[in-house]
Amino acid sequence: SRVPDIARALARLSLDRGGPRDLAALGAGLDAARGVAAALLRQGDLPDELREAALALGRTDPDLATRLSTTLADELPLLKRDGRFVREGFDPALDELRLLQVDSRKVIAQLQARYAAETDCRTLRIKHNSMLGYFVEVPQAVGENFLREPWRAVFVHRQTMSDAMRFSSLELGELEAKIASAADRALKLELSIFAALTEAVLAQAEPIKAAAQALAVIDVAAALAELAIDGGWTRPQVDDGAAFTIKAGRHPVVEAALKRQGQPFVANDSELSAAGKGRDGRICLITGPNMAGKSTFLRQNALIAVLAQMGSFVPAQNAHIGVVDRLFSRVGAADDLARGRSTFMVEMVETAAILNQAGPRALVILDEIGRGTATFDGLSIAWAAIEHLHEANRCRALFATHYHELTALAERLDRVVNATVRVTEWNGEVVFLHEVVPGAADRSYGIQVAKLAGLPPAVVERARAILSELEKSEREKPVAALVDDLPLFAVQMRKPAPAAAPPAGPDELREALAGLDPDEMTPREALEALYKLKRLN
Image (tube, rainbow, N blue to C red; front, side):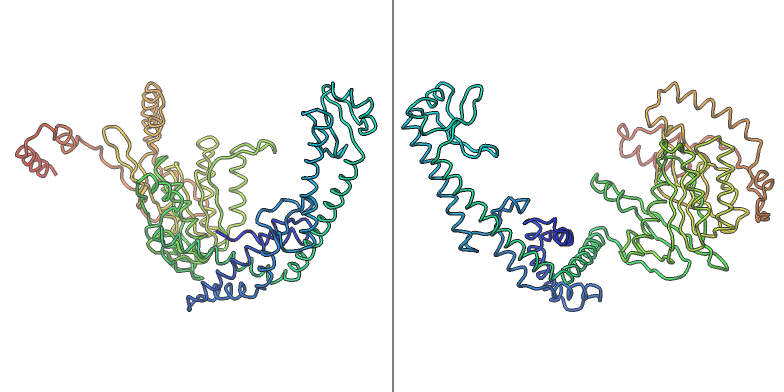
């Protein structure tokens, strides 16, 4: 935290765009760098990368940091042309010129007091601006007297304002020349000191660059170590295989946000490792309602892969990841109207890039492909995309969708597996459990989510009625027949289509629970009710 950006300061100085603060930043950074190196080397056994970084910090010139700190003042201007950045006592000649400037200010004050007394004008002021230099300013009425004898011989009229007049004098002009000379000579001397310091810094440019890079390495390692300790992260296994096994993985950003709210993050497993012969990973097809956590699950696995390959511990109980050569992500909704691209067009362009470029070692996450167009169009595109990922790209992939028809592909494509995000209903309300489990969702719970979002009750009820009619009209069309009719890659069905589940009858256990009122029950009644519920189960 005490190390400024020394690489940026060095670059500015090398381009002759630096100022006193850049020199001070380099001095502070080099001084702190040597302290960091000493602290690391005292630890003894270090990883090779950190040991090399510590040694690089130790190769900087300690005299340079000392010279910068002893030369530069504590309070520094932004620009070198403003002067007064050299510490007092560093150069006796500079101190003499500064003393002359200070004494001149005292003389100016004394001259103003004398003029005010001689002219009997208590409002007389000696001021300065860049156009006139030093001048005497008096009110308009007093200025008229200065135009007559005896003051006409002392004061020379320079400017008339609306309510004041300005004059100069021979004595004031001579004093201004002395002050200007002292200021110019002092600034010239300071600029020569700045040039000498810059030359000394640039002579050490390579060691300073190496130190900046070493500090970056240490900073990243320290930050990742702190995250690993505070978040309970574990060391992943990374090799050149096709494995992708994550146990109890978590999304680091969402987990941190929930932690601040005092809520736990529900960890989930992920298995995309190659199945059977070859090095081709699985495609996991994830269904479930909105708000259940599908997008979070996709992104957390991609983040864990990135963290593992950059040398970090990962937010998981354990992880085994074969090297991912490219990570492709198609999530969210965005348009590019300035280039004539709608939201759906942007989605298709990104999907096309994935299908055209992903190889067997890639990791692909796809969220809701085909949802930006008509239902059958979108379903067809998503269907064909999964088949292409399976047969042509042959990569590890996570594919989240609301098209439940796609889950039938797991029956004909050997590397496609289904997963769903668990939810439950309680008193007509949907409860998100955020658990990813094998299987397929039976429905999307979109109307329940719309109700949670605050849609008017009339709209929600009308949507329920329309959904009931639509489901009734589609109930006679089994998905298995659709799968069999579209053999894009001529893959044989491996299992018969699952039989339709019998309609559910009344739930006696839930009805009995709904009839209980714990606040009105005695302990004996509560115990009897518990035995009754046990018999129903």
